[in-house]
Amino acid sequence: MKNALVKNLIIFVLVIFFIASIFSLYNVSTEKTVVIGIDKMVAEIQAGQLKKIDIKGDILELTLQDDSKQEVYKETAEPLSTLLANLGVKNEDLKKVAIEVKAETGWQFWMSTILPFLIPFVLIVGFIWYMMRQVQGANSRAMSFGQSQARQVQQKGKQRITFKDVAGVKEAKEELGEVVEFLKNPKKFTSLGAKIPKGVLLMGSPGTGKTLLAKAVAGEADVPFFLISGSEFVEMFVGVGASRVRDLFKRAKKQAPCIIFIDEIDAVGRQRGSGLGGSHDEREQTLNQILVEMDGFDPNANVIVIAATNRPDVLDPALLRPGRFDRQVIIELPDINDREEILKVHAVHKPLDTGVNIREIAERTPGFSGADLANLFNEAAILTARRNKKKVGQEELQQSVEKVLLGPERKSHMLSVKEKKITAVHEAGHAVVAHVLPNADPVHKVSIISRGHAAGYTLKLPIEDKHLYKKSEYVDDLAVLLAGHVAEKIYFGEVTTGASSDLTEATKIARRLITQYGMSEKLAPRIYGEKEEMVFLGRDINEKRNYSEKVAEEIDQEIDEFISRAVTTATRLINENKNKVDALVAVLMDKETIEKDDFEKLMKDNQTSKQTNN
Image (cartoon, rainbow, N blue to C red; front, side, top):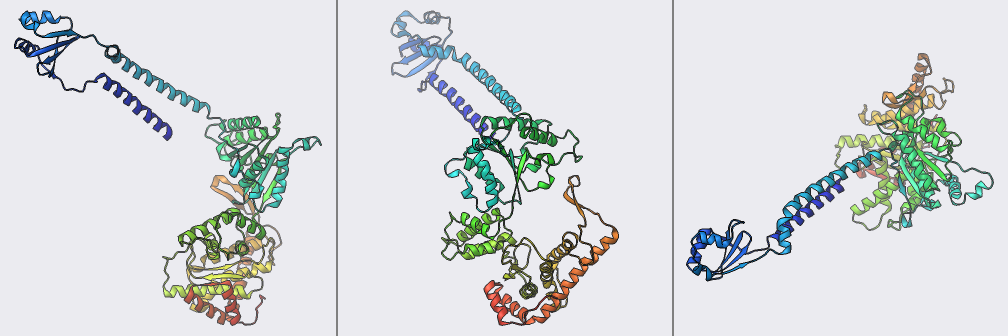
């Protein structure tokens, strides 16, 4: 829209400039000529002051004896001789003046005769032509309303992405490698009667690299790549989404072999029959068309559909059956080795200090996705530039980990001495109990510098990635979470609002232990509460109670029991290790932050017997 406005403005200025140029040519005379009346001209003739008269139609150009110029306008039909005779000019006086009749030149004739009629005609024709173009453009846009909005990406040169640019996800790359092989050499499979999967569904948490993997498949196969989001199919008008699906597959067939990538397919692929909009809902019509195009009467040879979603639980079963999305590739969060590889990929174009330890950063980032790791390196580079350094160091990377996890430092959030002491005691309680308990994760850093919404924080990270958790680990985690709350009560006799987030997380863990993990000692090992989709209530997931009020009361009692045991454990450990808590509080009040090595040395210097959780 903006480009069209600029273009029309430029055309308008050029037209005005052209018209002005023509009129400037028409009025070529730059000399200022005095216009006089006929009576004065007669007097000048009789006085012998005129030297020459040039007749140009109804204009008389007079040249005086001193070569000055004058003009006189007369009637067009009346000859000059008749005019002068009627005004009493004698022939003797007139013979002293040279009279010359000048005919108009060709361009002057055309300019004076045709131009006054031609310019309005050209302007009117130009205006009509412009309006017709605008109407035609509107019609073309209306006709293209049902066409696919997919963008075709042809990766070339440095912009080409291959599997080498995607770190980790080895299993996913192996699955997608067969798709690449089919696109490169389909006869290898068809000669054996094999059929390549028509669709591949990439499932994983946000930021795990689903879109990047799809681009890598297109880059490896060196085929056209059609990129579209699921939300781009759905419009207000019924039938538009289905029309765009048909147009997309029509374009893809012409470019075969090729790949169609539909990002966030859950926007259009939700389960049908949910009562939202009836059977003629636009979203359902679009989904029906996708189902037909993928596995209908008209086969799509060499057109492979790759889709991505982080909500596979809401997809329609017909979309997931063999013949449509035959393969479902799960992309999980990277483990420590994958995180190290991903960090190395992002470190290629960034100058690193010689002391940077990528492995240590990978150990500090459990639960980070590929997007989080990319953001980590970007934040480290920004922090390095802010400090006027030339190379990214280990300190900048470590601080970027905390920024991604907790948010930026709030240096303007100044605590009073009393609040600083409360925060130091709170964090010391977390750190000491975590250090003492055998199943708790090691403490990597303790700080009372505000980050995000937290006044302070204790950074605990596992030694290795975990996929299965024991009950004893959860029990110890509950004690660590409640240790800050307990420490405040022991040292100050009352608690503050600083433990609210700890209490929230502890309650969630205790409830999951009972209702999802079957770790209650009193209740049967079963699932309490069913999840169901409740979109029309404005919430994605709602819990449907599948147990009685009596069981609900027992669940609450069990939650209280887990919390109470955790409080008891934390109280006992803090009282038994007060020397460690006091030493850590003193360091935090002085330096505000303590790293892993210094923390472990401090705990060793104030060593007591290692406690266990009974």
